[in-house]
Length: 185
Image (cartoon, rainbow, N blue to C red; front, side, top):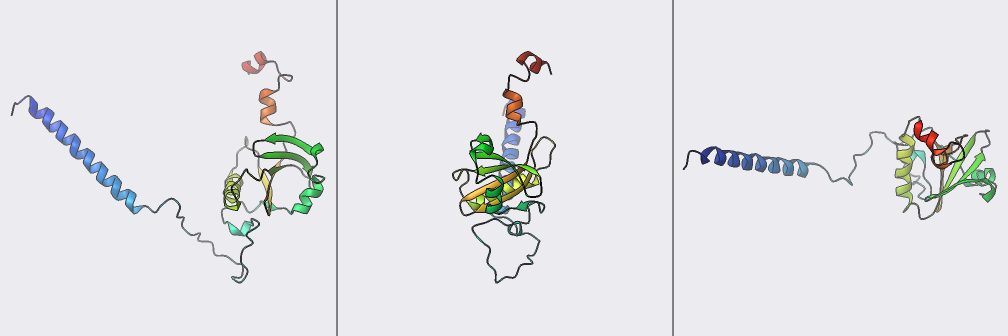
């Protein structure tokens, strides 16, 4: 073998062996992990008697240990009352997931109530996953979820009300600031 080709051959052989080693290690690690759809059981034990099966038409805080326990489950009659049966006069927003109503709860707190379109979620499982995510978020730039209602096919989220309008209004309303001043900020 030519002495000039020996270092090239050694480098190529070394690269091939290291690559092969990485592939083997990757497949070994991948086969030891459980599939993504399997989740470990929670270490929290239920305190509810085993004789009462869960209500499959509504979400309860009990059914998921990862819910923020301060989320308030509200009844549909209460929401219908504070929104005047979801009156169009109280609509403050209309998005791809449904209508948003402004309402004042019985405790005097003004809230934004988002009534989700029936097509917005595939079902109870997807709604529950969305609530888990929203219930955990804590950031000054994210609207806090205060409660929920899930009855039959109706899915409703209750958010804190932002007195000065939505982010969309602030970004797209040209009457409050002219474009040049907005860009200078």
